[in-house]
Length: 96
Image (cartoon, rainbow, N blue to C red; front, side, top):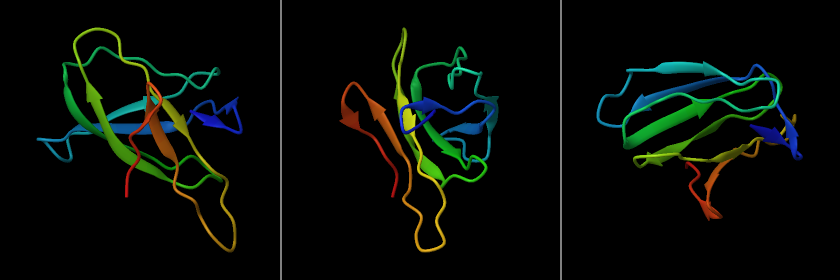
């Protein structure tokens, strides 16, 4: 998870299988802003709202093998809140 290309550590992320809403698996990002876990292939809904940052919500489409995504968040503002993005292989995968 990144903000202006800087890692965000200890941010809570929640993943749930798309076909099983509410079956959340919780992760905390490490000091380098990364997290990892062995999950079966499928579509997952990711959501997170790091402290002082705008929320991020979207889908991850995992295939067998290694999957890599970049999650970018934006700071809270009194005037607006730009939702974060989830990106895989240069292809935008963001939420609403």
